[in-house]
Image (cartoon, rainbow, N blue to C red):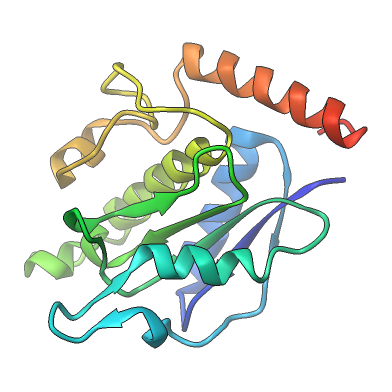
Length: 187
């Protein structure tokens, strides 16, 4: 059976990893497994910005995709950017095997607000579903409650749900049927 792997960069809280695995299993229906932790992605660090280039993390993940993986989700505590944006919550290959999310800006402590672990976990799950959705070919959704809606600000993340809307679910199911046909396996 094909599997979605979670690939932690550095030390990621066990509660976060467990929530990701459970939530992504519920949304996408694939087995969830965890890869061994790899070191913090200092190879991608821009010391001027004190952020990591997310494209370099995706490239690293691509070099470590297990044979039975349908997708791999990297998770890092490092703040991420891409050259055209000052920060990103995550980054994914559209229709590709790799995605990565950053926990940095999803945590209230980043903004010097009181710790709220429940809110933090909800945000992490939403962004994981969003980025994995892109790997399955889903683009940004116009429904602001859908996990696939665009999130340029934390308020947009907080507004959406950690699941796909009906339209995105239909598109995802069509994609997985195509994946099953091309791999000769059912999900």
